[in-house]
Length: 91
Image (tube, rainbow, N blue to C red; front, top):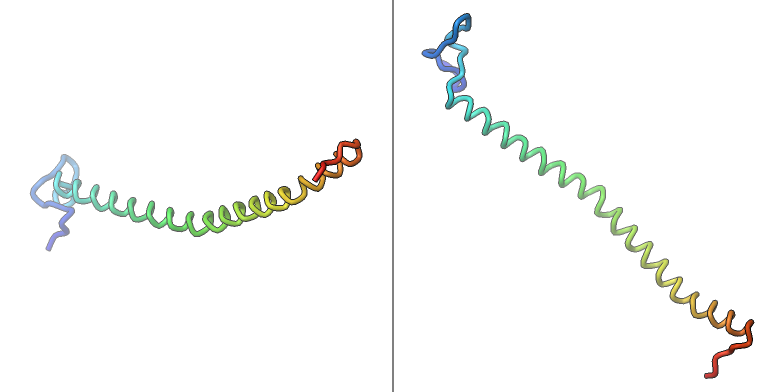
């Protein structure tokens, strides 16, 4: 029994006819390689997401915390500067 990738009836000079690839077998091999490539890309995309998504969320959370802290500190520093220059706010 022969492999579906080999066709015994087609040959090239100096090549065993049982090892000659047909157009159909080349197309089948190409499709298998394309499917395998898609699987590898999908797996790599998932792994990158597992690494980078938590990192991106952490960075976003850190920036939000910094923004919140700066939002609380800015008015205090502004009041302090206004007080030192004699331009106090009238409430």
